[in-house]
Length: 362
Image 1 (cartoon, rainbow, N blue to C red):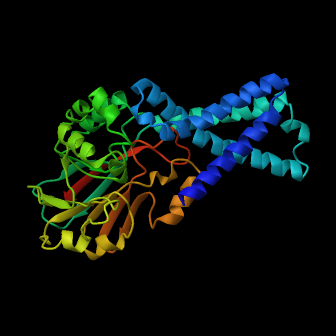
Image 2: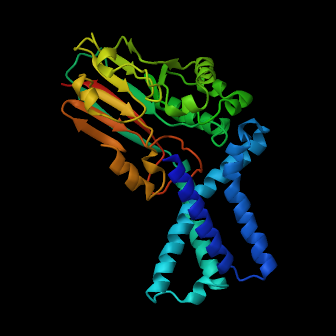
Image 3: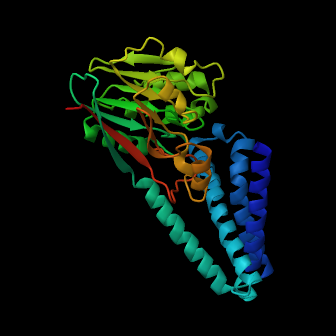
């Protein structure tokens, strides 16, 4: 699978750069300069990972990470646009001159791309508040308000200032609890340590519980665990906690750990009268929560593909790749994520956090 992805990325870069070369209405030297600049941008993603960019000075590492991963999404849309134009040329709808040494072609494509990705970046920053109301027949001592997030991906591209804004949003809700379903950290703990990001998480004014995601394993599990402790986040790693209001939070370890507990084992002995919330980062095998008698499962991981058309892929891969879902008596919410991996772009998906209102049924 990894080899296939590398081949596809390489082919996409080659196709896009070939078209850029022919499209530019510049002398040979100008074409070489512009095309090589694009090639350097395309290679910056590879350079970051191949040359151990995580150890570079933070501003340089952050720049290469942002630029390289942003290019990946830009390249996808350049490929889509050039494929459409090539198809139009083959059927006689697009003149060949539009794609060769063309100021009109260059200006048109550049304008479309700039408008598209300016909107995509704005849409990423436009965090959506999703409210969900659940009434339960199980006894609660009082109604509860719980803020739930997943896929924050703090690191080289999502820095301390954005985490501060996130914490402000959380505190503005005045929740009883905060639950985070994994991927708090992106690929390295280092930028979080250098910027003192744990101090922002400690500003959350409600008890905060979290589970690990696959990116905590990518970033180095021991370092991730220490950061979460320093951030005053209570980790549930194949464990559970009974809260005094009558709910139980069950936290599964990520499936990156091949030795994580079976859900039936983890939930064995749960009191059936307590409302049970399961945090499980990756929303595979949703039937397991139903079989275990879970009342509500919160997951993330999918990002719903981040940009279209990848949302079509995730919609096919998962029973539910995003949103509210129900199986029998078990309700689910799969979040498209608060933050994001790679470039800060959202097209056809949204950055979001869930506000769960849990109350006793009348």
